[in-house]
Structures are given as C-alpha cells and as structure tokens.
Image (cartoon, rainbow, N blue to C red; front, top):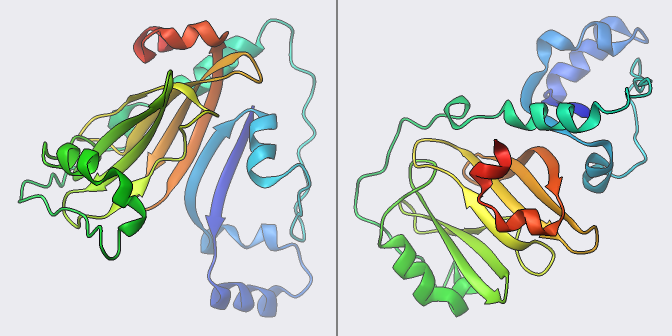
Length: 228
C-alpha cells in the first residue's frame, strides 16, 4: 500500500522559505507552512494509474524504499486500509431543506440535456448525499450504468468518476450526512471486483482507497457484504 499526503503551499510562502534558507533542504522547513489537502491510501499500481509511474521529487525529498511484504499479509492489510474510512469521518452538518433548483439544460448544464428527465426526477426527490446532492444512477445496458450527482441548492449536475463499460455492475453506498462515497464495480480486463472510497468536496472527487474483493462475481454481492 502507498500512503500519499497531498499538501499545498502558497507561492509567497515558498518564496519566503527559499529566500530564508537558501539551498538547505526545504523538507526541514516546509512543514509548518504547508496545508494538508488530502490523504490517499491505495495500492501502488493504482497510484501509478493516477499520477504515472515516473515521479519527480523536490529538493530534499526521496522515495521510500519498501521492504518485501510478508507472504499472506497483502489481502488483510488492503482490507484494513480500506475499512478505516467510515461515513462519520467525513460529516456534513449543513443539510439543505429548501426548494430544489433544477439544472439549466439550455445554458450552463446543456451537456446533461440528454438525461434531463432522469435528472429532474431524481433531484425532485430531494438530497440524499453530502447534505445537498441527489445521486442519480442511469442505466446504459446490461450491467452498465453511470452516475450524475445533482446539487439541489444550485441546480448544477456533476459527473461521478466511475461508471460505463469500464466499471460494470456499479453499486454505491452513501448517506445524506456524509461526504464519503463507496463504489463497487467490476473490471472484466482484470477479472476482478473492486471497492473504492471517495471523498467529495462539492466539485472534486478524491480517491481515498481501492481494493479488490474477489472475482467479477463478487460484484453481484451488496457492498455491505463485501466490506464485512
């Protein structure tokens, strides 16, 4: 497993550190000025698909040399890493109770116009995810579906990063009072069923963890069963 800490630092703060410490290792001084934006736990091959296998390290940084994993431990460790994420760790306290605003399918949201009826029907049922969003799953063939998340406050629809023929038998687990989305889907190329955890910040999806739960047939189970 790879733990990735995503941090940012303003250009002004970075320039001040460079001016103050010159060629010294930035890693010795950058910590207090950097802001942690996300923590991602994932398998090495999955991280490589996001950022590529080639990495560039800042001055003073170096890759960690991992020892060989003990035999028989990989599955247990992967399951534990994924299970550390619970809905109550990503709480939402501001629940939208106002009148739903529907998308502008002739203007801002015209890219979603082909699915306007399904989106309208889904949003009119009110929010069911992350305080103010409606999760709308639309079929695209046998075992195929994709997901649109509609903001009941602003009317803006957004795509979910999994779905279609690349992510078959897609099922989701989520709740109104949390920003955590759990997705289960099958990859026929790898003959594997995966479970992924995502954090949603209102515009972006951050992948937190991914693990396989067995062959494609495992995706016939409910997410709850594969998480047990």
